[in-house]
Length: 338
Image (cartoon, rainbow, N blue to C red; front, side, top):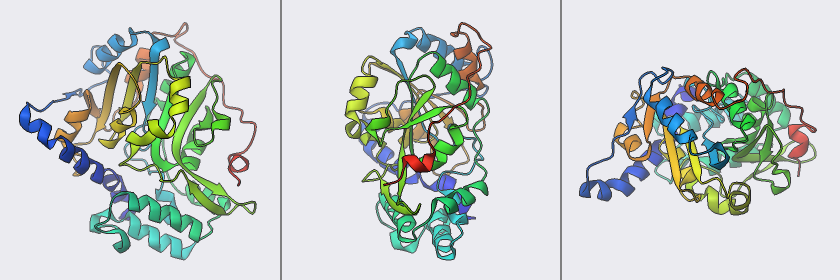
């Protein structure tokens, strides 16, 4: 049960916060209503028409920001923290089931506390239990994390067009890295030494476990962690990167699946944005009016990314472009030892 309800719980606090912050504004003017596109893959769908107009702004001036869980991954995929409940450590498993059981209020120790306490507590547990890289990999192998259909194709097309791609996630970096690394080079923005503008590099902002030389978890960065409630702090944390690498990119394409995902671009300087959200009407934590306030257009949570890939292919010299596989020069673990 815990592994199922986690998909509903992490964004819940964000919805409440956003609605509260905008309640006064809505009382003064008519509430914004995002368009809803039932069939985004149709040639004449509104989302594809909006994308065509957006890309006419010039790809050289565009920066694309994605969420990871249930945005780049499918709506029925496990999320980044889910595999921690399968760790070969009985105490860890029992505690994680409590943390993931949002249906019954989550772990008793953090009930009625600010939402960020979930991340502080879970990450502290990883370090306290001295979880090894081997155990993390073994538990992840038991977890089904699937990219959304056509996700790797859409990402490849963006990078082929030299459109920077930044993934901002409240999840765990090692999970995202292992899922995307078969196709792309990954540069963690937690370490400015690996920021790279080389082809097929995705820049990643997420929570990063650092390991001791015996491959046991020593700490989790950044401090404070990236959560569902503080993605608006990304620009302040990484201002040198955004001011240098994406300074000329004044048009932002944001794709997410929760209200909090939109906050990732709130403070990044830009003149134009197109915000597209995967929306699940059966999710009790994702109220439609909260989505309407922050997204420009909504699409079904079960949709593929074919609509994005198809529009990008029109901009490529060859619509049959296929990227080469990633050839990382070092292992994930070696890059993340203290």
